[in-house]
Length: 427
Image (cartoon, rainbow, N blue to C red; front, side, top):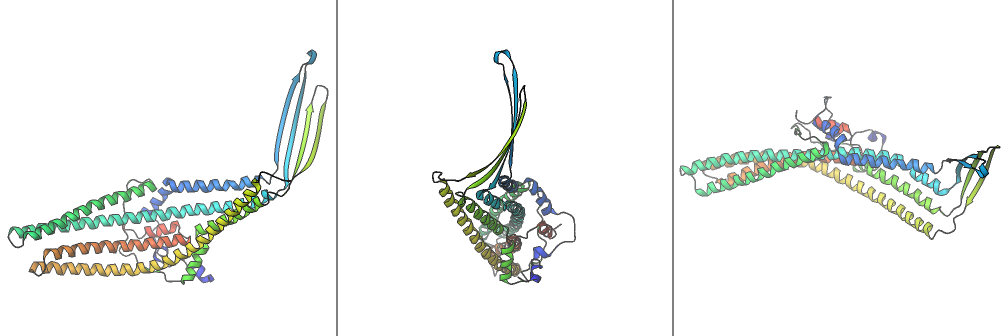
């Protein structure tokens, strides 16, 4: 990937369109609330920070250990009381231990793993929040369409009832209108439940019980990717995808762990220093000694061999997990590129279809008035119009969701993208 392309930002709508407004919007407020209230996010952060402590634990195996003991004893032989006091300082230092060294090398990946895990938690929270909010927008749009359809079919039912009463139409037209109206009412109840469920999902994540769902502005531009080839975007994803980077670090760490257990049969060399002092009723004594200890493992009930096999397999497992993630990232990136381009065309097609449905309903209604079309034709045209409205609104939302997913796959999703989307919500 050339240097010019590396500096280019993702040329799709959510990444390039930043509002001049600096005021926090509904999405930004929800994100800030989710940072404090989302249990999954807090769990992931705590797990990442707990992982990092493994670095200090492994490092401690290379440091000396220092211990001190103190004694005091009193004796009273034949009525002559005497007190003896003593103190011992012991310092142990491992001079050579390949398992400890490789253990440290494995743990040396943990700080970066921790940082990436926190980034993954942050991006995961943003992605889930945007997805949940967009899902709530879909539910709200569905409710608004259902309400409008219910009102329109109620007016149509009233109209045919009036016409039936004066003998202009047959009872079958009234029954058809009544059935369509009843279906619309049933859809309305379902849509109302859908909105409540969507708001519950937002509350679970953010702790906010009442959310004013703001729709995407009609002026939001639906744009595809304008820069870079497919291979360049795949390369960008391979370099930035957080899950993939974590898999690589885990594979490196697993390799060092396997080396640590593979070297468990090697000798270890350690140094000890003892300093002793003691007081009695008659004298004060001090002394010290040093020692070198060479330990050679000979047999441990096949535990050493079993651990060598176990961690060699674990390294192989981590290696294939990484290779599998590489394939997943490549496939996901290519699919998202195709889906984003398809979504742009879908939105345009849905818009044209909506305009056609509006004209079709108008023409069918006029035909009904002059007797060339029946009530079933009108009801079908109305149903098709409201379905087209739903399809168009959902296609726009789906496009934004795909763009957000692309940012997540690239590993570049950030609070700036939340603010960008905020600027395209209705005020």
